[in-house]
Length: 81
Image 1 (cartoon, rainbow, N blue to C red):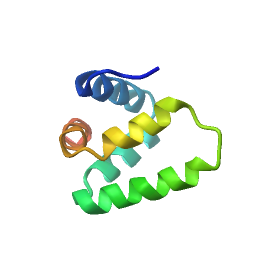
Image 2: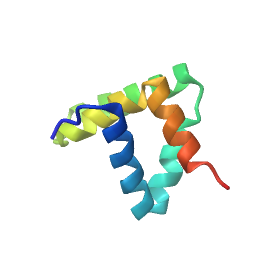
Image 3: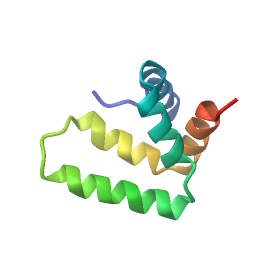
Image 4: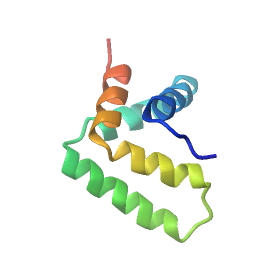
């Protein structure tokens, strides 16, 4: 499944985060990183995953988390209140 818009992808990521607090914490921490650090970390995750069978959605999600606007929106939505 390929998500067509950032809005849809952010919504889907936030739905998953709402169901699992550990995923929410990891996403919040990743999205709060300085952009270059975040993209480097996601690149390492992508390289690690390249040798494994992962869903196409996984690669799409990694790419989206590397985009500043997507990461900002997720970090804001998952920020502690």
